Structure formats: C-alpha cells, structure tokens
Image (cartoon, rainbow, N blue to C red; front, top):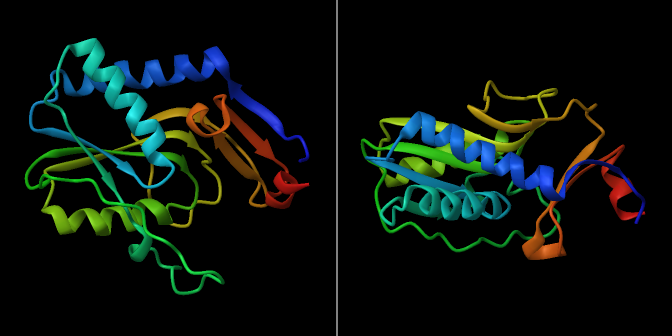
Length: 186
C-alpha cells in the first residue's frame, strides 16, 4: 500500500472528537428534544464516539441515538458495478419536530448527506438538522451542503482521496490524504 500524507492521528484525532463534543454541548446544552444519528456505514464510527463521550460528560443516558442506512437513497446506487448491501437501520424513534444532529466521517460532494436527508424524511419532519463531519473536503462540492461542526478541513484536488481509519477496524485512528484513490491500493 502506498503511503499517503497523514493529516491527523493518535492524540490530535482524539482531541478533535473531544472538541466536537464540547461544541455540541455549547449548542445543545442538555440535548432536550434532540437526537444523534450516524450515517451508515462510516459515519457510525464517529457517531458512536460522540454519543459515548457526550453521555459520559453530561451523565445522561437518555439522548436518542440512531444509525441510518442510506444505501437505496443514493443517486448512484443503480450505477454501481457490484451490488450494494445495506447496513441495518437502528432507529427506534421518530425525528418529528426534533433537533437532529446528523454525523458522517467525510463531507465531500454532498451526495451522501443528500441521501441521508431523504432517508431521514421517512422518520418524520425534523425541527432542525445540523451536520457534524470529522473531515470537510471543502472543494469540489456538487451540492450546496455544508457542515455545521467540522473536525478538520482538508483542501485537496478532486482526484485526491481522504481515508479515515478507525481503531475499531484498523487498530489506530488516522486521517490520510492520498494523491489519488488508486494510491490507496498500491
């Protein structure tokens, strides 16, 4: 595997998530009428960490937390060469008139978040939706979608690829920038 440029790892990775949690606490206080929703599959790693840390800091056990699959809401799901497989949806509540904190790992074109917003509508009409992204690619956005809470901004050309590695999968937390997506596999 070819080496990319490490953007964030170890302690700084952990501090970035901690900062995001404190920003959410500033904005939501006790999280009344608020739910946290992780976008399957990759956003759930960040959502799990944020949910666990918030409940620990605030000593709350009643923040509603769900995991939303967007597979069949994507605008490209029929154009994939290999069939897509859906992740389990874990949402036992409605979002009707609630403040929703939508969480994903990387915000790039905006298409994933568009699909998540469409899928979210099946659970009611939220009062408000805010987006948390660990990485905001900023350039080459295809849709007018922006993150409200950002871990790190990565300015990269369209051919570049940002990979978030999670301890739960790889044994370490790291954000890597590759010059091209293919470089990840060399």
